[in-house]
Image 1 (cartoon, one colour):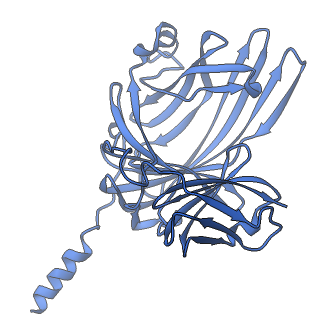
Image 2 (tube, rainbow, N blue to C red; image 1 turned 60 degrees about the vertical axis):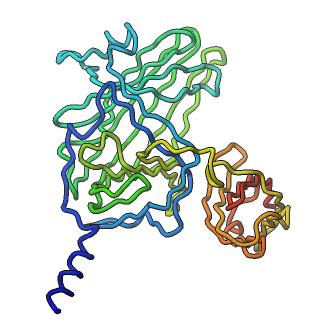
Image 3 (cartoon, rainbow, N blue to C red; image 1 turned 90 degrees about the vertical axis):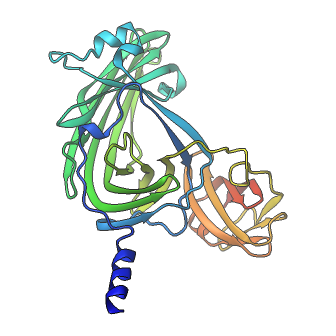
Length: 366
């Protein structure tokens, strides 16, 4: 009987016990790969980003997607003639790349210079995975923008305990309009290994934490002046698996002192019909927030359609920046928020997601 109990205890303790892994060049996507991801801004209430170390357990099985996307990886030759030449995969090319991915459109100089059709270019080698630069349509012209110093995203082999850093920079000259330049400092720390659980499955993983700081400068020829501004300090928490192609889970946060605000969560997933169910097809809830304006103390949200249940609350600045995520239980249709007492004076948008739908409220902190 003792042997049976011992065996049961061993099997139970081994359900989520994996061995330490090492990540290398073959564990990432190649040109032609397409990978579905689910997206959200809300982490389950029982999770903590401070969990790290040996044989750790990161249980994010409670993630609920608000949208889905497909990461598409391309060969450099499929991005167009100009980029194919500039980022050609030749040993003598200092801007050599062997993989590309669609980037996010953006605007420099406060939107005065449109930057669209963005491609990011990477070089995946036996020693590292690094971003070489990007290409974009800038004022109607396809423009390669190489990094002077390359952004080394991972050094290989990637093992528990590794710490490394890199500095990268770019410069864009736009004839008759001006120029923009920027610098970034990246510090990578492989701070844990163990088991990560997501709605997609259970995986043996390494966790890499990347801390990013930097600054950008813009000069506008028509106005004859320029300005510089620091980038928001961010951290990327990435869980890597063998043959994973991309991080099986990635959580990005903004950092303000000792505080972290989740800005995005993305994880590998299967196709999910987001038109079915509350969390995926939220309907408007009648709601109000009081006192409004508020000078401090407890703020209460009253929901007419929801008596009891867990709610996810996002607090946004007037420019749309996510400042705070809160998970609270509604009791008889009311949610008491002491957490808003620490907010600075200003206007905010507060989004609420509950079992029956969503509400969006405007709130003034005096």
